[in-house]
Image (cartoon, rainbow, N blue to C red):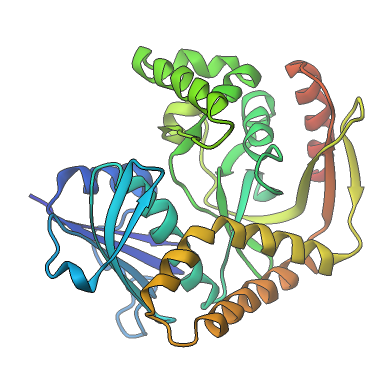
Length: 352
């Protein structure tokens, strides 16, 4: 039985997971299968003569002993795990033992932010954003949680002309500027079915039942419990291709407006845009920061965190200075056809 998997992200950073627990390997293979490499995973362009790529190493154990050397965390009463972390600019080592519900939480709260940290130390920014691409050009949709990143990305893929999926939740960016796919499974929530009803036909009865039930729980809990149904890009967008690499021609900050039509406005204050996006990015990493702070693994934790923020800010500013930045105000409308028509008119012009 295979007990380890390795995933390489664009010659930038590597993730290795080791476990003899089948459902752990199944989860990460489903999540990161697009990036899986079976041989020479840590070699730069498969060249053994240069330094290996930075790596996040996760070991998922059945039992941990002695437990006194590990920290304990419980998330919303359901997921719980013991963990230990070591951090350097070249390697993040995570050891975990937890219940089955801990696996997606460990991915979200520990593995993903660790990849982000290492990437930032080696010239890549992992930005919370959706993205589409066409003819080698990408459009990056970013903004705070609930701004509409998934909705806009989905509408463009569903009703646009020859657009490809580039990123669903995060995208790798590098000064140049260049953008690279960060392919994980899409997080499907009930509200997306209202905007792209065709998705219903791509779900199994059990998946549809879960989407509806999770939507009810989300509303009942006042947004405290947001459980997705995870689907691969192939399932969600059959026939669509994934654009692995592109040149970003626009970064769009999504806002919800109160006007009747979509509005596009160019941003002049790049420093303010960078500050907003970095604040958003680190809000997404808040659980990781808290978990890491508890370990005392980093002696000068506040200094380490400040350096990480500075590294991401410098990368983002360099990218934004070479990429047009716009605010895209989304209109108040329940009309799927009207919103998609307005969006595609604007986006097709930006990517012309």
